[in-house]
Image (cartoon, rainbow, N blue to C red; front, side, top):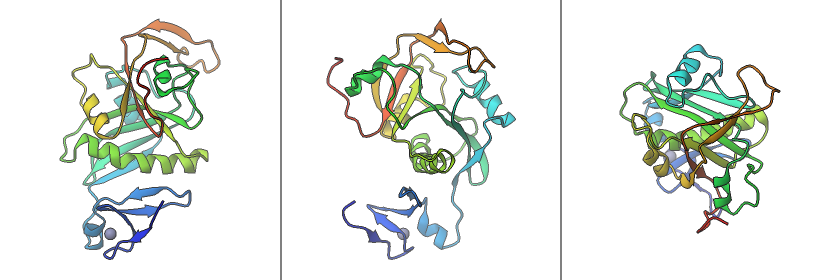
Length: 227
Ligand SMILES: [Zn+2]
């Protein structure tokens, strides 16, 4: 980072038009309406870490267009999104898919994920609110990175999400991810591998699924064409 400026109003780190708190891990977390906070106004968007077994979260996953039975296996975190202390929706972060050919679009030799890759497996807004979906997503990333660091000891660097482009009922369309700096890597083959429910060590079962759009947010540049 070049020059660290301090905000004259709130004393936080100032970059551009936003003020940031810095964590022990060195992450910068934008403070929503930092100056309103100084003036005693509470933050409209809060991400509350919840258990991935939380029954309302599990219900949200089942109701989501991906029709999953629950959170994926492995490392994962879940958040309830609150707007002005009222429920607005859910976010979930977990381990990335095993192999995705679309990753080659980033110049990777292998279709497997790089270290420090995570996957947003659910972003659902199921209650009305005023803050834009893309704005919520932008606010969530540093919070999620910090919570992940605290839980698992490393900072996510490559962020992926798989969106079904045929799902027109989605409350969080692809455009929202693009506005939050996700780039499209192309479609999956329409085949997916997952372990049977409850069988953590069983072999993955391949099944046909509708192709998903793979979206990526991170430091790697998208290559012009597939290798
Ligand atoms: Zn400030």
